[in-house]
Amino acid sequence: MFESLTGKFNSVFKSLAGRGRITEANISDAMRDVRKALLEADVSYNVVKKFCKDVTAAAIGAEVIKSLHPSQVLIKIVNDELTKLMGPVDNNVYFVSPGPTIIMLAGLQGCGKTTTAAKLGKYLVAKGKKPLLVADDLQRPAAVEQLIILGEQLNIDVYSEDNKNAVKVAKNAVRHAQKNGFDVVVLDTAGRLHIDEDMMGELANVAKTVNPHQIYLVCDSMTGQDAVNSAKEFNELLELDGVILTKLDGDARGGAALSVKAVTGKPIKFIGVGEKLDKLEEFHPDRMASRILGMGDVVTLVERAQEHFDAEEAEKLQKKMAKGSFDFDDFLKQMQAVKKMGGMKDMLKMMPGMGSQLEDMDFDDGQFGQMEAIVHSMTLAERRQPDIIDSSRRRRISAGAGVQTNDVSGLVKTFTRSRDMLKKLGGGKMGAIKNLFSGGFNMESLGAAMSAGKKIKQRSKRKKIIKRKGKIKRR
View 1 (cartoon, rainbow, N blue to C red):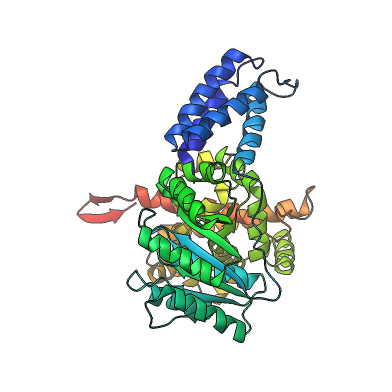
View 2 (view 1 turned 90 degrees about the vertical axis):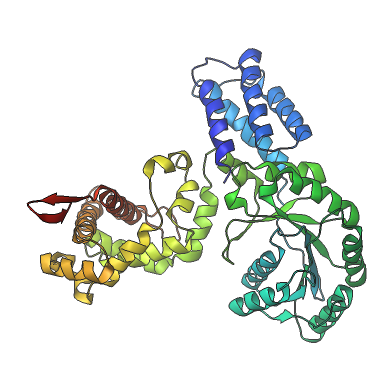
């Protein structure tokens, strides 16, 4: 997410690292590079112009504290201005009483409205609501079927009709929701080109008929300025209440996220950060600014950890680690929880200073699958007592997991070494092993997983088939 922009911002800050103080000259040079980086990221020209002006005004004459470098002061200023640019925070869904609250989704073709409708339904269920998804996209082939399938996956009701009149379907859906006690109605409307007057007119008629309490525009963030321009057009027609940016996980530039609020005046409510139905996040400008500047997003990471880790189980795990009785079943639970949180790379991107080092670390989330296969191929006794895994057991495990014997040996060796290290930490001056999160996420055991996975990958790269004395051997 925003890798290109993050790298260019970091280069700008490094150029100021050796300066003794902030001057008009070095700020001018730095802002020239910032301006270029933002324009290349497809940020609106007027937004870039105002942003650079505001940063320059705040930076010139800024007092550099003895303990800080000019680059650190500029990072703070840029972070504050980015937060202002994308803010203020307004990720609340406002519910009416009595219900149902009607939320209408609009947007261009292919922006991901139908999937977003399902994601929003899942989000609402987590908030204790009873949503009704309405299949009102009657233009795209299979759009109705897609929403029905997604609703079944999430166990959320979907309203649909064999009818080509979008206004009537929406009106009947609201009546159905009122009669059957649904809290929220989520209307998935047909995608359209903003220049298509007939379809835009249909959208306006739907809005006029059902009088939605909130209208969210769904935008594909990867389209950059096109997303911002379409947001402006839709806002003039419908008076939007907010924007949902999709496909942000694949957006290396960030132009839409940095421009849409400033251009439309409408807040970004949610961001889609993956294809899975749980990949919809509330938008927080301060957290996004921190990610863009390569400073991570620890708050979101903590929230994810608390959601996927059980505090009571984590406490038990801590005690087992301190005693040195941490086994492969515990290791497997940790790996599975990490996968639920989005995978190792996704997590590391949220840790301060780690995002820029991911390429050097060469860590692949696919390694989790290989490690899981190895653990699943072990017997119950082998998982609980890794020390009994001898050469014959390793051959059997490797055959069952479809990997090389060396891969099994490496994982067992790394696991055993990490377990012994954790035992020493638990009994030494550090006392009980400390968790990074109150939710129970443990960096030490995660480090063991990273180390084991990395070694497996390195070995797989080194494997070469060589001929020696007429036999084929692997090393």
